[in-house]
Length: 328
Figure 1 (cartoon, rainbow, N blue to C red):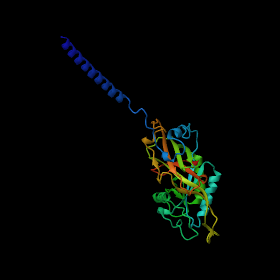
Figure 2: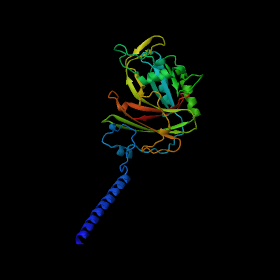
Figure 3: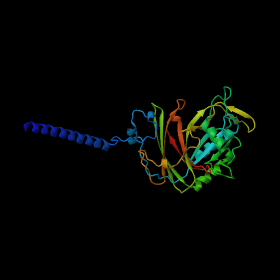
Figure 4: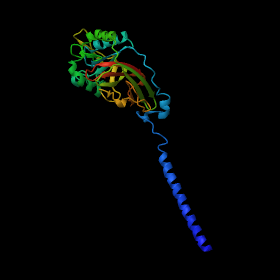
């Protein structure tokens, strides 16, 4: 009788132990299922390898500041001056563009693009020891090729926010002043822009964050472009001596030199639903879009002699709705 009791007690203890182990196992499995990604992955829309001495989280909390309400009420103008260092009359156009820019400071900006019609480099090519400086870049040549049908027949020529006049967006520099004044006086603000830049000298990393506020309803496609511009550079330039006999200015000051597009896209990034995210990846409601860029500045450029021109244009007409300038 005692022996039978002991056998039953042992059997009970073994069964209880198995039941207890099963219960613990189920709770462990259930607990693991509940611990789902305790450390959320950060939203990354920049090249973090270009950050220096700071983590992405720290960057977002300090230097990558939030945008405040944009109080701007004016439309700016971009003059794209298509030029060449072997173009005799191009200095006259460059002078006109510079005069207009100075007359309307912070409202008019200039990009000197060294390219000919259809992306040609007749006046822009490198030759000999005098014209050894290469002012061209793939993006600039591509832009001229794409826009040539807008009336680009030769240098010098330019666009005024790519607005159309007489069915063409390219105009002779003699008309740049009046067309610029017309846009400024009309002040049709379809898009507002804000931008934040941060530059890290150690990595030569440049970060740009933009807010695009679309002011009018449109079904057309909007794109943002960012030009990298070199402020000034002294290099030889063909110049008109008496309007017929060319001469050479070995110490000519080239202004606002277009060095390419920050993301390598000549015609920019399209504003889409995926652009409606803040720096943490949160979806933004309304008509504001956000685009971010990270870029390693080439060693050949001095950051204090560079700036960015940021603009939004309508792809169906190529008209530039707004442009702003940002220093590095």
